[in-house]
Image (cartoon, rainbow, N blue to C red; front, side, top):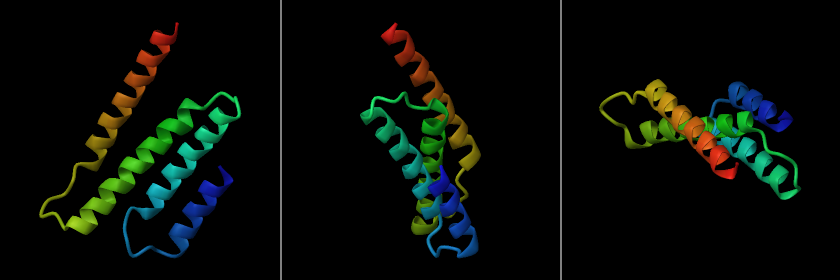
Length: 99
C-alpha cells in the first residue's frame, strides 16, 4: 500500500508523457500484493483486488486513448462501472461455488 501511495505521489509530481502508466502501475501493485498474500496462505482482500482491476482498466483506457488518438472520447466512467459490476458478480459467483 505504501508503494502505491509513493507511485501516486511520483506520478503527480513528475507527469508522465504517456497517460495511463501511473494507473497501470498502481493496479499491478495492488494485484501483486494479493498474489503474494495468496502464495503465503494469507486471505486476499477483495477491496484491493477490485481497486487493482479498476486501476488497470483505467490505465489501459487512458493509454489506448493517447496512443490510438481516437477521434472520440472513451466513456471511461461507464466502462469502469461495467468492470466493477462484473468483478463483484464474479466474486459472488465464485463464493457461492465454493460453498
